[in-house]
Image (cartoon, rainbow, N blue to C red; front, side, top):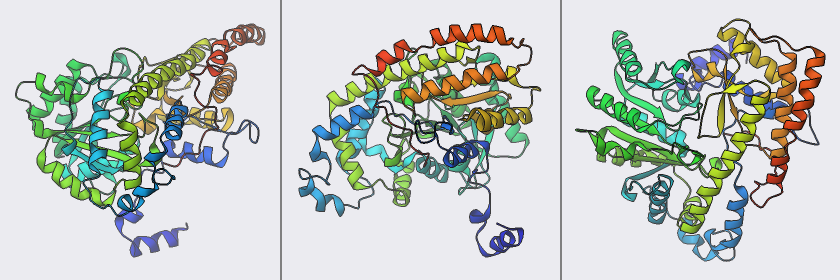
Length: 486
């Protein structure tokens, strides 16, 4: 779009339509575009870009498909379920199907180990977690107000909470020396800086488990967070969309589990965002959930949900699936096992070539440390390295600067959105990259040393364990990666 045309549109259209608030001009979304323009395919485009910038869970679709085949009545588009077509097609109540809200509430309880209960009457549906976050922002803050957000954080928050609401996000700076832990000191410092800038803080947004870190907030940290927001009398929005992706100890702890442990906790300040995009792998279904302990917020958010309802056809299918207790328990257990296996195989492959990652036990990604490959410790050099990885190595990984990380050199790498064979190709490309890319403070191997190392790597990364896994009944479906659409 030319300058004249751009200026013309700014006069003709609204500020929201013509501003850059969507955040699509960041390196995070540029990586998706690079993949879309040259997508990897094992036979049709074997030298294309491998999508490792999309946090999708594709490891358990065989379980989902098996359930659908065995339960045809769950869909109104089958012979067995078509008799309910009219009732589902004309249902318009923005409260949602009662059986849907009940099933989602029970699933949220199962994911949290049945240690807490959720009231189906507080379940408010929305068009994915994106819609849920925006609705909460509209409910809790006015244009110009701010939410504190620990860094690094999901780039989409800039779109979800800021673009149409006018709300600001103010960083709570977390650092690598303590594994990016959210501390009382960091929270207080961010709040003080916001006040000094005459910014009204209306809430704190946390992501637990963390995207992009893959870490879980412990019970004491959650208590500190609750004490902080109660002391400041600000809201707490807890994004728990990765709750069921915890694959090893320590187990996930929901904010709902610790509220009673904090004396004087004002429940009206606590709100949970959930969805089925990550835990079940259904981003295309656009099932987002607001669970608020505030009656007024529940009422207003439900009215706002008219702008982003979940289709009744989807509600009916989800209600039937999540009401199957045996399926749910089996799915949660097998998903956790497969995520652990994929995480371990991938991080061990990185470790073989000296690449370290932040210790994590949840999520669909790892936080990869490439600081030693930066010529200078700057975000400009981080982006230079990222361009090499995208354009030469042909891997779409996401640079830390797009997550507002305070330190250059960190990258998020997704590992659950591809089949096993594609993961092998990705690790092979990374091995070649490490050999060819000089690293600061690390002696570059000679060709002879590399050949010897490569020989050892080919043995250690022969993937015999992976091949056994692929041939077992527990193997995820081997299907090409889908193109990023959301």
